[in-house]
Image (cartoon, rainbow, N blue to C red):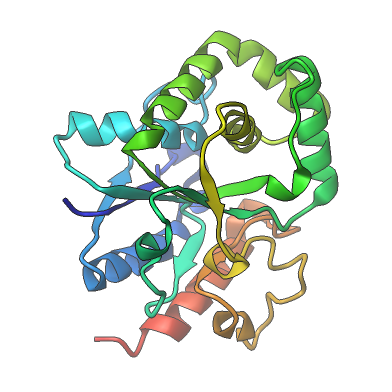
Length: 252
């Protein structure tokens, strides 16, 4: 059974420019998968009306989608479409110890604190967990042991959808990411935290997103989230295209 890299990448005809940068993500991950004998699976169709469920939640259906397509698998990496993987990235599937794996969040701690506080208060009966174990959901590695947790999260969303949306709109907090964090800790999932180099998120905030692309020498998976003044995803396109061309243009 192969390992799987799973990505949601849906072209929205109403926001056509938003998906342009993700072409570079797809190409980089397809190259990495071929090199490491991994199967690439991309969801490119809406599952629900966007007003009911935004596509960032679709990653929770990864087990159902693979099962429905009769795809056998060992482990799954679920990656966001605004990531680029270095062609020489080590095979992280060999580092998991068969656990649920992720990288701790390295972005706005105000945003994390508000997410934890308000979801805890309004949805999780004041349950909490250490903030240093709060993960970014843009790169997750899992296996069949985690199918139940994902099913539980889907059911939780469907049962609490209106309140979840209200919390997001009222307090300006995260969407799927906080919910995944709370379930990971409430269900006492055995997890392993990976190094920042496997999900280099919030690079602008860390002041490493620069023209010399030195960040490509610091880690393996680059996550182009939270770029300010990013109207119509133009800066996401600029940086992802520039990074891809730097890393891949000389590869046959």
